[in-house]
Length: 500
Image 1 (cartoon, helix red, strand yellow):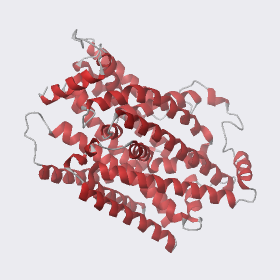
Image 2: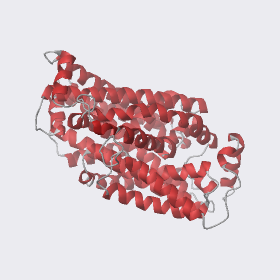
Image 3: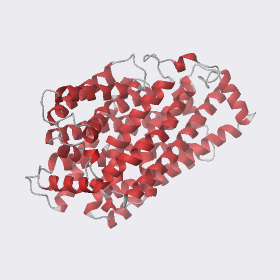
Image 4: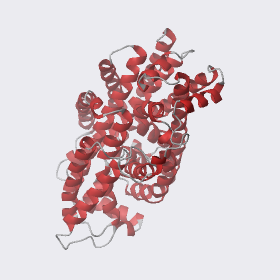
């Protein structure tokens, strides 16, 4: 890295630190997890996008294109498809409840055991996510800067933990806005340089990428892309069905995302923020896809690993763009880590510690405990980050571990909202079976299409819950989704405050 690149990275870190200090001085105790329920659609949308985006996507999307072609494009239409149930059903349902932890709903609908199971699975899932994000960014930053990736993992995770401990969710969300702007600028600048420095511009890069096979499955057409076989790595059907389930899990059963709905001033702000998230995500992923094609076209046919080609391209960028890309990687990573830490603490302190029979702690004690627990979670995340690389390439990690492990949460939420045939006993037993099976399948089954891990894990959990519920005749008197939002929200809050 040149001097100007280093200055850009340091300026980014200084800016994040300054914003954290400013927001800390204005923070109230309610800001730790829900920001006083006063956030607008703009920060909500960008925060959801950059939180779920992470350095994994930053690196995995272009390297996947360089390695396998344009199969990744099959997932992009799903963003729009999944928005229909999320904006029309899930956001109105969750925002109306005005909770802090999403999994408090599971206690009202089923029992406390199911709530703790959901919260515990979420924390484990998010720890895997944060570890993967740290590993991905550290590996590529290591190739750019020459620093050991172990040091980069510790440094990046430590900085994110510091400002998260200082500012709470409001600081996390506003830093996400800055991080998104930096990320998009870096990707756009790198793509522009790749195009203008090629002898024949974009047309030449596209032609060269096609010659190297990087625009498969479209040219040459891959007939396996239309196959229904569940063992083909990526097909049209596995991409559409599996990505839909994975996205629905993220947007409807993930405390990290739903917590942002809870911060919204109004339901309309939450819905508008979600659509803004969709637009931002599609823009960033399309730019990364084109960037992968540009790097592949510039390199031509080569045996060099895609990660090494990506790193060499970033190092060759002029005008301080190497530093901008490095800062963008840091931004994407820290946005995942800060949001993950805050949401894990929201689940832990709300679901596990705040028992109805336990007297609420004073504000200063709660803040002190919040910071101690962030330190503990950070240490666990850093330890896991050193183990992530053993599970396969980055794109495989995303679909097998990140998308697959969280699937039982979606099953529990859907059963709670729509099914009268599932009771507390069934949800508890089936949730455990689904959790254990999901971890075993995601980490131990190598022959399944990447996008089907989420689908299989959801189906196993649903079946286990229904079968376990069949052993008793007690069912819910009415499906909760059939009740009006206002009445249900008021009843849920009353039940929770009475310590049901």
